[in-house]
Image (cartoon, rainbow, N blue to C red; front, side, top):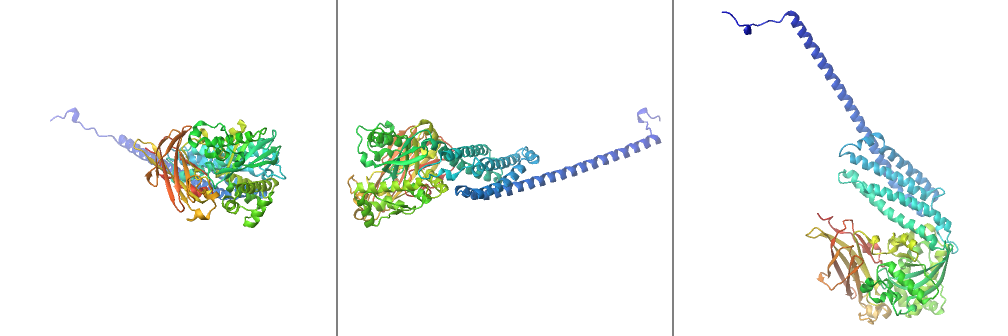
Length: 632
């Protein structure tokens, strides 16, 4: 049988078999060579990755250690700056600069910068870079000018000596404070712009803490820089000035602090400071016709604002109170123009006395001196005794209001003399004034628009409407309705509670608790001048208070409750802000809690709560926010 061609099998020749074996061996060698190269490359990459990771860990440790060391030194240099320890501050600055320089170099080297480009995880590296760079900028460009060199702040130059302040030193400090303020503000803006939502907690939490600290520092430097800028003209650098001083008596509360019972005029000229006039609100009497005041505020606080000096600060808006007080003084003292108004309370005086030391009182009226000697009132005022003396003891010892006014005038004159003579340390005085301004116990207003524009950006302005009161700003203010001096015995707390409405808006409840701590037998124990003696319809020993609540711009006032029960409420608007007025009446040892609801709050920023300063520390009055975060 014959096979077909397709079935024929051709055996490979020996040459073909030899060639095939050669090709197979060559392919194997190539594969082995490629595999070896891949292994070597992988090993190299692994080593590089390990080295890269080790370098990043080394840099991270450098950054962490350096910044922690810098943070430890910050309280030290702050204390040295405020106490005037120039050489010690310069040494501390040198150490700070070493630490922040190391952190900056580590956080900006090419390897670290490269890691910041990695998707997702890279944000953590870039955030750390921002912190390190900001820290180094603040130390060199903000703290540095405040510490050393020709442009440094000369704290001693800010203290009056023999009734005069060195305006050149003050103007020099202005440049340093302005530089520091700008640096801190830029650093705050840079860090607050970092998106923390995808960062590791180990990075986001310190970043948020640093940002919050910078915000606080920026506010403080804003105030200090503004003060250094406006003080020279206010002190007469551009010509003589007259400033009206209101000493607010917290025993009879007003929205900005207390009734402006004692008054004085401070004359300044080229840095020289002189107390040229003194008086009392009662001496000015009744203004008829009334001084013109904003009609919207008259509707809330009555025509008394423009009729009596004692009532100009029923409004919490200090520019309104200041302008009204200036007009009243000018009308009563023809030919004297008031260039500005200052206000402070007894706790601000206590802060000043911490810096100046005790003040010995001298009395022009022999009758006052005799009463003081026989009653046991102190003839030396200190930071510890000035508040109870001025707000309580003087009323028990001196019954005649005109003699009380004489006592207060002597106090004002002697404290002013101690302040302008250079008693105490300049750094301590600066600290005392900053503390008083932070607590809302020191206000300022200027009749010169360019200066007022600068003051308006600070806490000393006390403005409650417009851009300065923007954001989720709330206010809890108090006005005495007893017509007496019983507020010395009232204790208060104020708190905000945040919640969400069904339509997704934020709602806040302003909760205010007042307690009358007067003795049960206050009607018999305390003088009629303190209790009011029932002259204004309030039983002796009982305290009547008009509680005033402000909500943020565009929000809506809803309801009010007292001790959980619906309460009558006065509903108004001041600018774009809703205003609630609720009246409480408390016998001795009684408390009341007022709740005011504000809805449709469109501002999503953290709320700010402003309160009337009283004899209590602000931290004891303002309690932490209750409630969750923003609504969905």
